[in-house]
Image (cartoon, rainbow, N blue to C red; front, side, top):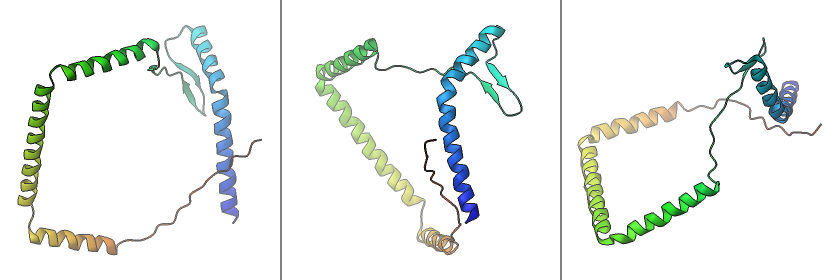
Length: 151
């Protein structure tokens, strides 16, 4: 059991290091910006050695809880409801036409599939499934769940 114990210890150490890395990342980002500013460089590489290369990345994020965005969402919703109420008969007719076309498409696909099969082809597919099932085997592996212990 020495390998299992050692594996558990290593995985636990990895998890603790991940927590530590997450904790110092905000300060590291600030340090990276200081390096970019002091070097007057357009390159975002802020650290590079034999262990790692660290690059500042600026990812675009949006705030959909912003008051103006929320109001626009509400306006869009109200306008959509208004448009739906403005011409319900024509909208229903259009939806009915779409439904009819989808039904025709489904029927055409079913006919197409029927044309692409035969009893012999189905028998071959079943034989293949049986042959594949006969090759079934188990492969050992380990699932490691680390219990993080606070230092």
